[in-house]
Length: 228
Image (cartoon, rainbow, N blue to C red):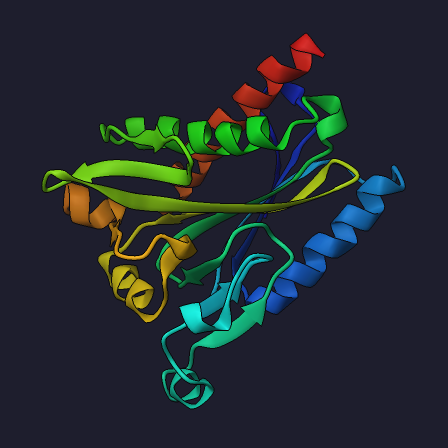
């Protein structure tokens, strides 16, 4: 499904549905190559992945607590990734967003871009009456859960000539939480992971959630573009 972004920003919204991690990565790489050549528009990709553990550029294999044989028996893929960060877990019970953007059009600052992704997710959660926040030095989005900070969204990106790939994963269903027990998530050690369903008691309409997230991200990008 393809749609135009709000306010004629020129960004294409693409929904890939459930897709394996490797195929999604190859698609992103092809879009990046086209973007560098000036032959393609910027895009925001939505998708989800079958159970997959990914190793970022700073990851250590020992941060995955399962052997290759155990991963195979659980049908969990293990993939290396050029994104920043360490180890994370993906499942069909997440909403994943991969913006393919040219930051030359906005701010050439990786910290600014990470905060932008965090902020877009926070605004989306606010639409569900969920208060979320950022923690200095810990990339991602956090919520209060039974009196402690819990991570509800993970973020890891790759920039090539200021063109972006990879992005963010928002935990939707409670089923995805258990998968993080197989890893040292983002190198944080003992950290609580939560999901939207755990907090509000149901899973929101996925199409409405995608509309909300794409709107907030595009609105933030539009504001940044005006200042360039």
